[in-house]
Length: 148
Image (cartoon, rainbow, N blue to C red; front, side, top):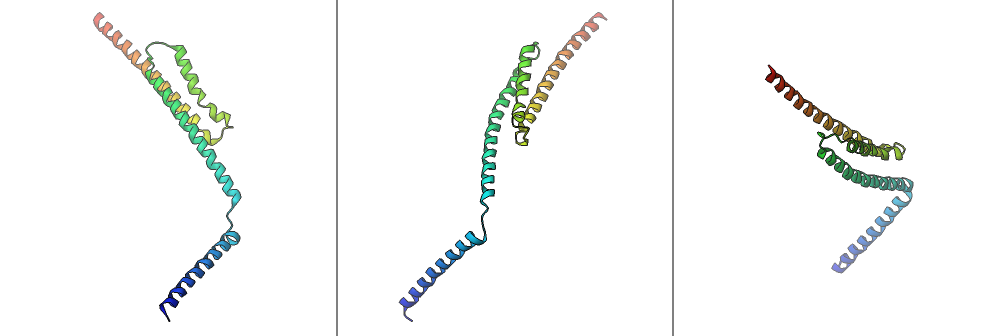
């Protein structure tokens, strides 16, 4: 056999192989292994919903960080009932997204963050009350020592 004949025979084999493999692949994907279109649509809808929830979570994270800073900056030494009530209402607002979405578990982050902030708020309030009471107790103790 001539070199040209061998070369063209290899080319013919390669082309035939590519055409047959393409036809077999198309037959397998179209008729034998069917891709479920309905499930794909449901998955895409689920992914879109998850991305929307992630955006909402980011927004809530920013709001919660601001509320956390407000709680840290409040001087609990001065009695500010109106400010404390406003903060308490703001904390309770974070539960609203969970209730608005028919208590869907995807939105439970609102309840969890609300409870965590409420706990932090209450602990900060109690800690400052404890510090204030300790200060008063020390003053009373010094006064009692001075009287003795």
